[in-house]
Image 1: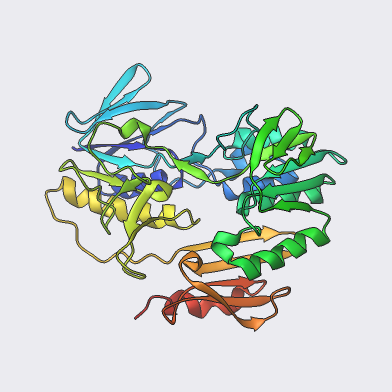
Image 2: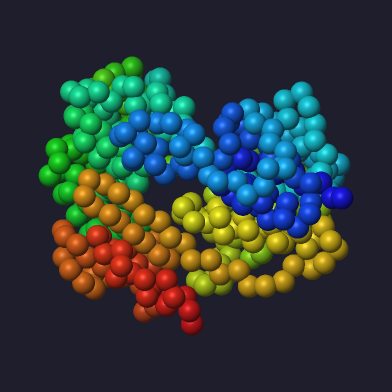
Length: 378
């Protein structure tokens, strides 16, 4: 029986492993954290506010006979030899699933790096310090930074957010909706320093490029992500931004049966175009994991994978009493307000060449259902 190694014990790795085990393959999943696959989005919201318990975040697992090797860091891989190196051990494979995901990016500036929020352990350390009256400096105004800011304000902290972008969450939402979200945060007492980079970190905050000195009891860095591809170096793969795959999640550049899933996979989606993209939306690990499992199963059985993979990217974000819901790829289109007001409950379409390629609703989740079918349907 063929043996599959899955590198990465997140949601994408779990779904791929389940798909492959259901097809009868022996599966070993290797994860760097000591935990079974768990749900990460609550770490910046509900769990951070109410207390972090990893057992309550675990995903339900469909198979008890998957071999889990947790707390093990993968250090290298030889596709030619079909071997994955883990600390002082090695695992051979017939098929490989690349599910090693992403890690938080750090700004290349001098001074002690602030902590980040990616894992349960990160959330536990941060939660201990978010006490009423404490001051928090958030470096980065993306979704994680803004969610942490909102949670900290609800915990009674004083919050300052700084970012290079002109508005919070500007890249996915656009300038107008980003500005409206800034107003919501300011109404809850958050202070912003935007449009300026960080020149230096300090133990008690940061100095910005314009000389502004920001101090805080607690700081957190939330400035994007970096794909975990270093262990794949030397295999002649395209690792320019994650791992390049075809539409069915098969890794390009090798004849060995290898697929990639989740945040690390850069693949074309014909729902939009033929441009390979790495998409960090919450539903993609599940969908790419299942599709990759089907593809790898076919390859291991000596068959050619078939089908047309057209997943609908989706994400949500809860900040205060605001619920953002999105379908498609808003970041590749121009924002157009179609219902409501920018500063209130609204629906925003994102157009490219006159076609809707994404939508965001503010407290309008039910009104977005039709977009799930219509975006990219032609």
